[in-house]
Length: 125
Image (tube, helix red, strand yellow):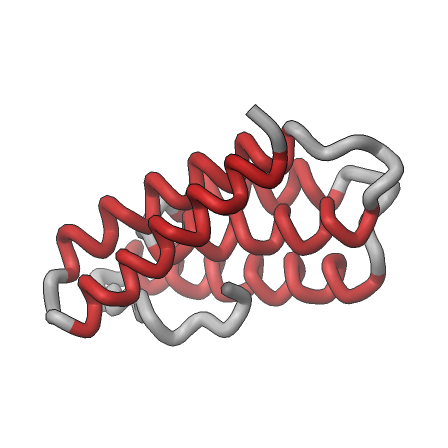
């Protein structure tokens, strides 16, 4: 499959996740966000090296979706992997660093027993 196919699948799943949130079905939303993130990761892997802007947008989206799914360790690992790419535009570097900060804050809150993941409030997707 191509980047476009994986990305379209991710967008549909993320939209369904936001609809589930609107219905207050958080468990289903989390599952949908995780599926959307996996599709977006596949999209990221399908991008050629000649598309740095698309790489940046897709990497940021995949990390944000993993964050929304509560997959903090996976989100941090993907953010680090993306940041290690030499071809990211400045906006993606900034957004990925902001996401990492949010991830670290959430991890610290979980460790302190004060977790309250904000599923629908991230503005990266």
